[in-house]
Length: 281
Image (tube, rainbow, N blue to C red; front, side, top):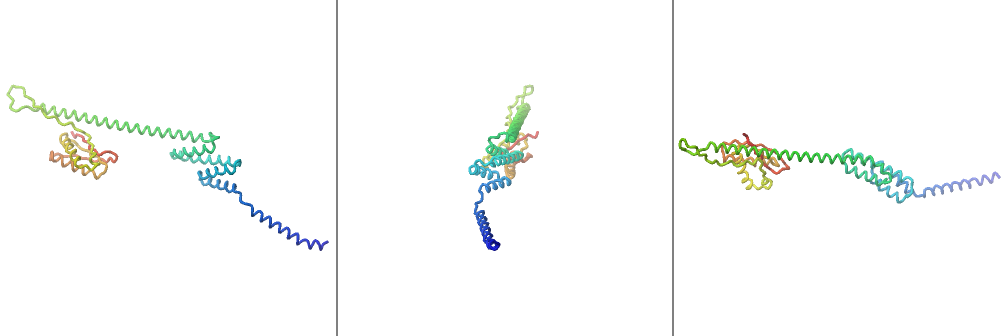
């Protein structure tokens, strides 16, 4: 009996070894679970902040793993990630990115609107604040423009009054020569001064239209001499100032060689070139 058992032992051992090898081969031949791989990749996308990729992968799993209990968990996790991104964008003032993130979160969990309530309210407040700032800026610009226009009108009024007073004084002090004694002097009509235009635009400078620019400056030079004006030359580029100043000086000196002109420069890149005349008396 012992002899039989001894002889059978190698056969049994060999059988067990063969069965073990077959089992290992069968395990090795089992294919990798694609769902497990997809869920792992989804986890990785979420951890790396690749929310767009994670959302696309989740939609693919909803069709291939319908009914899987993990899907709802990942939907909520992804929605919360979008909400965090929206909150960060809102703190930086990026309302467009915040609104898009909120839209993603709502599409993932439409059955839970309360999840996005906080960001939704904050986004509405941020929009209202932005609109209020824009309205305030617009009103301030309108007020500044109205103030500037009022100042120009007032300056023009003062210049007209000064010209009228000067004309009246000249007329009062001018009489015909050799008036007979005892007779009332006859006052000679004086030629009134031309009303000063305090603001003169120079679109010709933008068009390089030097001929018409020279014609315009002829009239400006006459106003400068007649009303003793200082001139601010407002140009888009610094190189234009010497050119305009030279043209204007030549015309002023031609009218009155002893006149001491006073020019100043102002750069206005977004404005049509212009001259601002201010009486010095």
